[in-house]
Image 1 (cartoon, protein in one colour):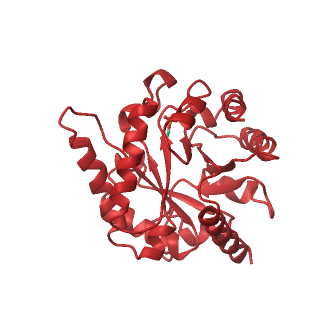
Image 2 (spheres, rainbow, N blue to C red):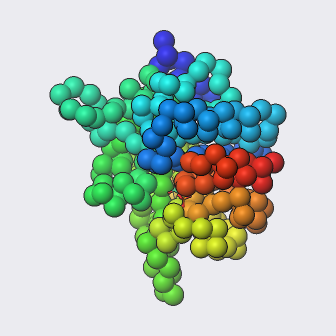
Length: 266
Ligand code: PGA
C-alpha cells in the first residue's frame, strides 16, 4: 500500500515536472551522514516543512535510510529520498538496503553516482544497475556527474559526457525522461560559497549537459547544481545559470544554515 502510494506520487511528481517545465526549482538536501540524531532529523524536517508551505519551490530531503520510515507521512509537503540503494534486489545480501525497501518507506528520489560513492569504488556499471532498480521501483534517480578538476584543454567536458553516456545510453527514452541530473564538480564539494562555481561557468556546463542529453531524448532533463551551495551564493547561482534547482550538502544538514538558505531563496 505504502509502496503504491510512493509510486503513484512519484509518477505525479514526474508529470508535474514535465507539464510545468522548470517554473519551479527543486531544492534537494543531501544530509549525507551529518545527521545522526532523531531530534536533529525532525528539526530539519520541520524547517523544510515550514519552508515548503506557500513556496514555489519543491523541497526534497535525501535522508539516511533509517529516517525514511520516521519522517515519511502521507500528503507530505516535503518529499523524501534515499542517498543510495543496493545494487542487489533483496534476498541473501546481509546489510543491503534495496530500492524496493526505500520506496516502501516513502522515498520518491534516490541519488546515484554521487562522487563520494564513486570514491568508494562504485563503477559506471554499478551506477547503471542502481539507476535501473530505482526506475523499476518508481523512484526518480538523481544522477550525479562532475569533473575532478578543470583543465585548460577542456578535458573535463569529456569526463562529464562519459559519465552521462554510461547511464543514459542504456536507458529507454521513457526512462531517460524520468531522470534528473545533478552537476557536482568534485573541486567544489564540501567547501564554502567562495569555492563554488561562478554562475557563468555553471551556465556553460548546464548548456553543455543539455546538449549531450539531446543524443538520448528529445525533451529537457532537469539539471541541478551541487557543490558548496550556501545562503551566501544560492540566489546568485539560481539567477545566473539556467539550472533547475540545487543539490545541497553541508548547508542543508544544519538548522541555522538550512533556514538561512531557504530564506535566501524565498
Ligand atoms: P556540499 O555537498 O553542499 O557540502 O558541497 C554537495 C553534495 O555533495 O551533495
